Length: 341
Image (cartoon, rainbow, N blue to C red; front, side):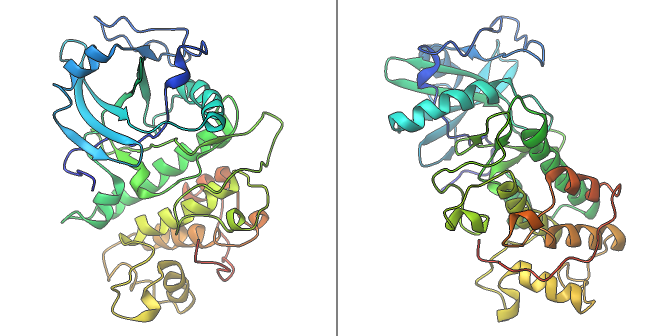
């Protein structure tokens, strides 16, 4: 069970290969806390004793996942809060080789809407990763568990933050990256309530001239694109499909699947929102909350455009961002063809 009172970065990727493969060519001056140029690969190597001291003996747990636990820490003479991931399970050799390339690229990635990987420890059998600390927790908690839901302007901003982070992975990185696990539990909020994508443990890299690839099924049920179950190549559109669920969850501040819903037709958010949209009953998904009607309907249409079984029917992330920004008009979406994910 996750400790949600303190936020964290849940990134389940390994640093085992760091020493054998010279991925890291630049190091921070540990005394100054200089994070270097945004164009450099600025991962730092830490000793196990340094990180043990930084976390006060791994005292304050932030979360526990399938591959290890995350702890709050302080580095650079108490000036920098960090999240330290202590890995407890290693990947097989095949996945480890794949992660070599992922770490190389993600270590270079720097965007305001991505949680930043800062450093690592690979000492004997000990494997730890260090990330920037996110003080305002998981987006999932903010949407589904908080006593006070974000207001409409905040939700607009969050939706765009997440979309821009995905766009960066798809179009602006060294090579295209498919995140493969877009969901509110993998989005975190920083000091200024900016949403950032986290957890690149399932990420899949494409070659510069590659648009689709075969890979083992990855992701979380309810957010996964249909192509994962059809044994066909996946593309960046898999993330677009997942984002549509997150977008509608942000808009309505409720989970896509609510088994405790009062009426059967309300259980699956996507189907219910589409029915409300067609029947011009858009006050229902937001419980008559005061929202900007124009942007609300625009965001709903963008979300509904991405629920098709055929990836070619889903717009690109760039198009989606332009739709959300109001640069591109959003036409009436077709009826959802899939909602099971």
